[in-house]
Image (cartoon, rainbow, N blue to C red; front, side, top):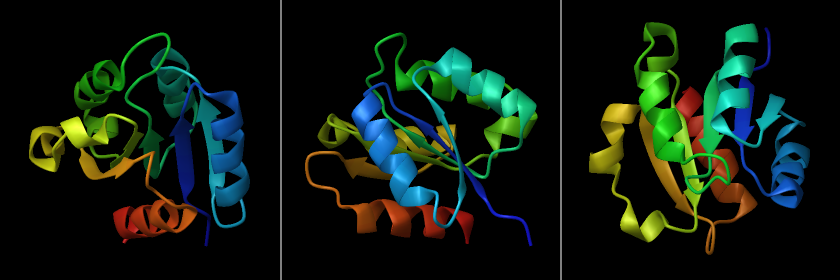
Length: 122
């Protein structure tokens, strides 16, 4: 059985590295610092789930969510938001964009990320 592929979209390099190190034991991990690169990676290889920061330096996570929804193949990819603005977001607002979970970067643990990914893949 092939491993699920997690696409981590995070512009903070140290955090991107932490996520990758934590996830690569169980998943194939791709990383991008912004939406354009993320879409290019998705075009090259199917992605099972996306871990997305909403505040990216080049564009916002919302811009990427809109783009993902504009294509039939990417609209079905479950998205987990990991953001410092989690308290301003609701799952009801973001569910139409494929968001299945919102994690607050200020309080989340590695266990939260792992369980969210497992749940999204179930």
